[in-house]
Image (tube, rainbow, N blue to C red; front, top):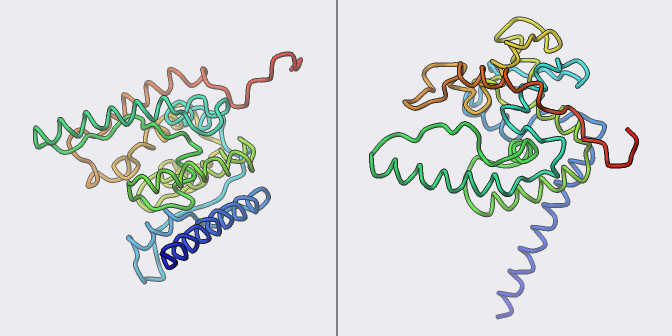
Length: 251
């Protein structure tokens, strides 16, 4: 049994060391911009392998240089109360899990390809945690690690900083990461110049960005981007771009 206790101690030490690494990395991002994410590196390898020349686009844009139209549109699409919650929306996670179970059961019975959901149960902070550090593999350990990293992100970084990093790292098409590369690729303009229609169109892409970019990645039952764009435009003025003031704060 001594070897088993030693193994458990090694595993615990490794787990603690990994969390410390995540915490240090996140603390550095208070003032430094992430150079890349785990998801970006995985996609770069998938697309380019060992080739030095690679059509992966990314360009950092400061938060105040990004159109409020885009900020509002992405909130409607992905996480409408991002500035109000503390990183996790457990009710939404439960609903998404139940919905996915029902959909998987229907697909199994009918033999159909799975449809792309309009919105999962993950918040923007959870998506950021996964993209920054984790693989796309789906299992309970990865989900638990995602929740730990989400907590570290929320404790360390401001909501505005989290949103800035998200907008500059999220995928917007094959090899297209961040709003700087996305606006150049789709509209040949800058993030600060996006109008409502352009912002809503880009936000509608986020649940399935590769399909939005290239038809070859679309499957039967994929997202109706036009309908999503219309929905986003109708609700853009309903979301807040900052935390609500605390009661009695006078602000």
